[in-house]
Length: 193
Image (cartoon, rainbow, N blue to C red; front, side, top):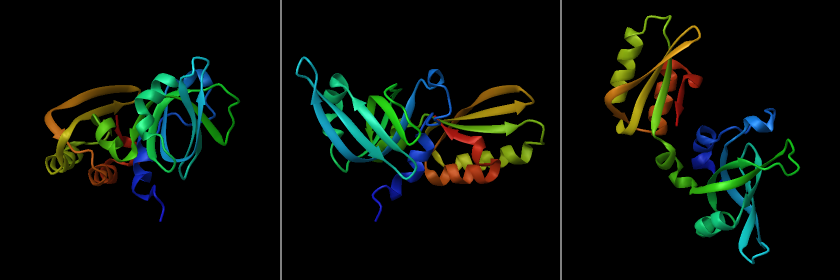
């Protein structure tokens, strides 16, 4: 089977700024995950190891540059067929549409990304519709999905957005909970950060 099968939702959920149509200056932080398909260890002028790592998932291919200090910190995770999630900055080395190039700052085992990267569960709510029933559904769902993440509601009214942290409610980052929330408020109105 596909080694990424269990992680495709997480990769999609947590990947950031992989749209090649954006000007490079707008892409400050990039992140994606996948399987390490190739790895080449090199040595800099001070004889410190660094690596070029090819990472692939069902959406994109990434060439990741893992320079010396980052390499030393995460080398235990850099192995062929390893399942990793990377965060970093865009490399300006011959960028192309079919290959994203990232200078890596952090590497996380794919199995840990949901627990590592989930701090807030965000829900956007259009203030122009009557929300009592909607808020009641969200509250019930939240009570049934307790966890360690803050629940943040973004009330939108025209171009104005008001952000409210739901007091003492801590919720789960589980895929099941996120899917249930999206069924209530719509796919694009729920995100994790």
